[in-house]
Image 1: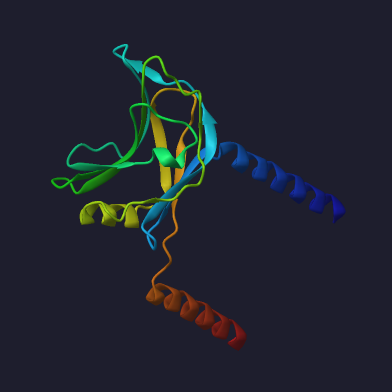
Image 2: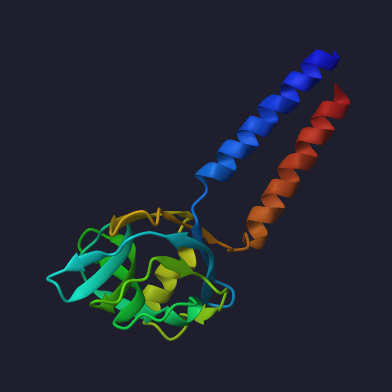
Length: 184
């Protein structure tokens, strides 16, 4: 019994370590209730130099072209970006696909080897209503780095609270399962 328990504990420890090791260094959280987003964490890497005039680091989630709107996010980080720091929300109305892109750019020769979030909340309520809706309903996932190297991916979560009907359904299902089990 003791050996079995020891084995299970070691398996659980290995699993916990692998989950922690695979976690993204930077995380973005979208809060649809307050219409705000924030970042946490820190990452180090190297920007991509473009045409000898600008240093760029960017991440995509669903690479989409089409109408877009940018939201400045520079205040959510300790570093100063001399050109821009934006999250760009895309909506292709033909294919009905939406996408997000995070972009940091500095004029040469400025490079930022480490990007550190400071948990400042940034309101997106002032964006066009279709882009607010996109951010409100965006499913959790990962931004994949596509310009620059070493920073790693950015994970993102959405703190949307389930609507009351969903909560009622889940609670009813649990109570039904419990009553059926008691009858047996």
